[in-house]
Length: 419
Image 1 (tube, rainbow, N blue to C red):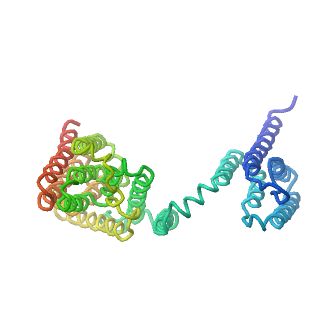
Image 2 (cartoon, rainbow, N blue to C red):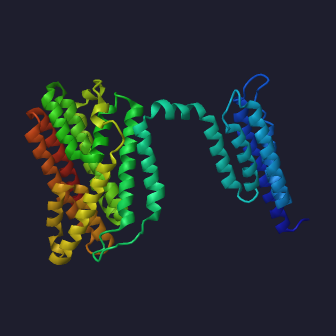
Image 3 (cartoon, rainbow, N blue to C red):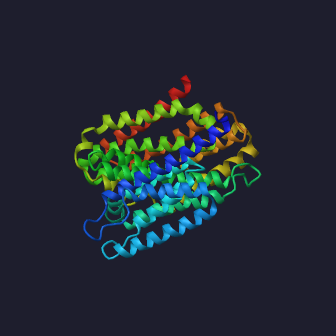
């Protein structure tokens, strides 16, 4: 009978060999379906790729010399495959798949789970050739691709390089947290934009309103007011989009608060949910028929996922108000914070909420004080929205927007009081 450690070695070796074989079969099946017919057909298929995976695993068992020799052989085979097929298929996807299968076979002997995940990813990429080509050439415009690359750079290049600590004596300015807000705003706006593109005009109106609300609900209400005044037949539809933009405001409040203070987000989860639900109900009751009326939702949402200058301006305003609030709080005391938040809310409710959340995370105020600060900021910001709707839009539009916006504040306040 074999000792336990020998049984463990045998089982791990068998697992690695099995994973390398499974990866080769999966990639080989995909390549087999994409072979060119006739004498110029691709060399590698459902038999070659499993052998490549097993070759990598076997070379790993033998040692470094075998890995180097097998790598040279696989490279030579890949070059020969490309030379034979480059006239009809100048791409190198099959040759790269051969190399990846060999490398994943080696990796499967030490990290079978990780190797299996990468193998599935490779197979999905290969099978999605036509969809990815359609996405890059027809579905995405140059501007949209540019914005996507900016989002990727902001997320994976800039964010990891920023220090995760406060740089000021008031514990208000944390570069990584602020830049995380930049990434969050861009991501949310992009998701809303892509959802509108995917769902079309039937559900485009409410989605356009929500997506615009992530950028600026106040600006959305002003834009919709001008559209309603210029085209009275669109008053109900514009009011519906304007009211539902408050959903974007509430959702972004949750993101901003959660990034700075998880405790405050948990405390305000029900009030935020009630406020968002009130906005949805008000938007539906305002003009549910307009959602299927075929209006140009893309014009309401804009022509690109986000504008970098607007996002940076938004987060700069957040950071400035957070810093100013921290300085004023240090001189005027904690009791002044609700009044400071109410004034800040006229400029931007998210900045005021961020200041309250930051104060909670640094221990300067408790959850109850922070909650009333958020309510004060939301109320002052909502009053500004109502004033814009009354001053810019026709009466029918203004009444719908004012009632819906006040319902959002009432839902938040009542739920907060009950909690």
